[in-house]
Amino acid sequence: MTHNNLAKSLRTIRKSKGISQEDFGLISSRTYVSSLERKLKSPTLSKVDELAAVLGVHPLTLLAGAYLQAFEATSVSELLGIVAREAKEINRVDLVKPTARKPEGVLIDK
Image 1 (cartoon, rainbow, N blue to C red):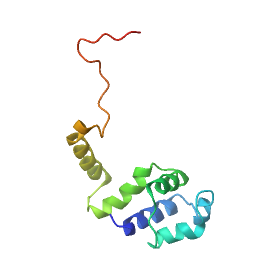
Image 2 (cartoon, rainbow, N blue to C red):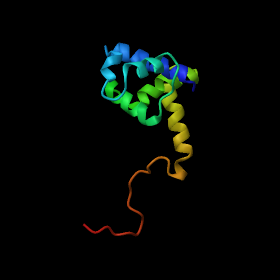
Image 3 (spheres, rainbow, N blue to C red):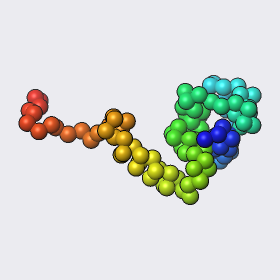
Image 4 (cartoon, rainbow, N blue to C red):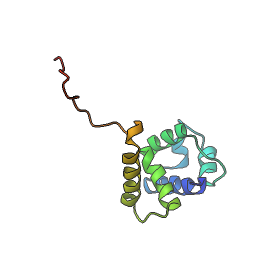
């Protein structure tokens, strides 16, 4: 993913929610948000969390908007399907929490 796609995703979500660049004032300056949207800077994952909170969306929504363009997926559902398949394949390395279940032969005290 290039920061170009993230810039577009940020701007699109911000405008659709009626949020101004100044509304990010508690976490970032207007000039920083502007520099993100103009593709001059790239945010850290921590900053993506903060930006998403101001936007009122899950951080993955912001990232999905960017990766949707980068992967040329036709829909968010298709992109999430790719993620789900990959997560299932690597579930063995504990990237995804396994479903909680009682191991056979183990008694659980209440």
